[in-house]
Image (cartoon, helix red, strand yellow):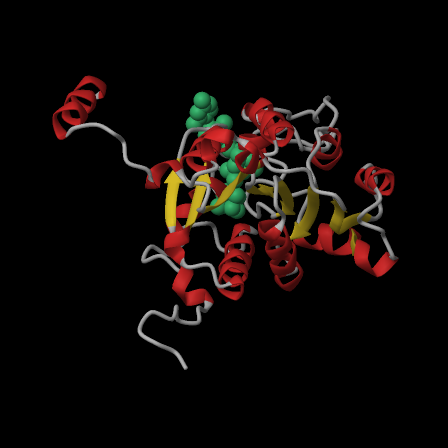
Length: 297
Ligand SMILES: Cc1ncc(C[n+]2csc(CCOP(=O)(O)OP(=O)(O)O)c2C)c(N)n1
Ligand code: SF4
Ligand SMILES: [Mg+2]
């Protein structure tokens, strides 16, 4: 029988912020947000137990539209910020969100380092293969030949492959979704949040305003679900083969889940074993605290 202290059953409205999203009508990021609200509600995570950290970009505006603790940090710096927050309070569920430019461009080194360190974070990248917020420049995931504001004669560079990079960097949960398939995305998020280590969910999230190449119909024609093809997500080499697939057909779903997840950094750090740092007494007097705050202000 429910008591006054029994947490109430959540639904996605509990994760809706007062501010409605201001993305362009039809932007893929709506599906990403919607799926995240549903995933968190179904997992029963309370908004106060959750932190969502982003960088800068249209996609990185997400924490403003999501009811939980949130940080809209600096371009490319969401993962370092989230790492610090997780180590300060490892009892908190920490989700990082952002765009392809944010995570795979300016933030690429942080992306690799976070996977190598195996911090227990879930990283959701709204991959629209373009810089949306700054009005349509080429991104590391733009296709070769793609015409953008900065590549009017076509992109000469090769595409970055985030999934292959994640596998090679030791990421234990590697998935890709499509914002046109929200139900599928909810499951990928839930499994990623439950995974006890760094989890990447790259999401095709079309920019309807500045990417006229990788549109909803373009993706709908190509994407297929790995689970419909009998893919074994515990097989690292099979995952790498699928991650390299790009063309007429493009896989989405769970590419890899390490069957023997290594211990995440926060569970190993000796300094964290007696509980989250934020719950421990600082051992400072009020005067010492005031002095420290004054020094850093
Ligand atoms: C240090 C720094 N460099 C550049 C910028 C300008 N800037 C803001 S968002 C952005 C790209 C955003 O692209 P992406 O991360 O793919 O997000 P989207 O808008 O496509 O969702 C850039 C270059 C910035 N804010 N800070
Ligand atoms: S510019 Fe593109 S990414 Fe930004 S809100 Fe509009 S459709 Fe979405
Ligand atoms: Mg982008």
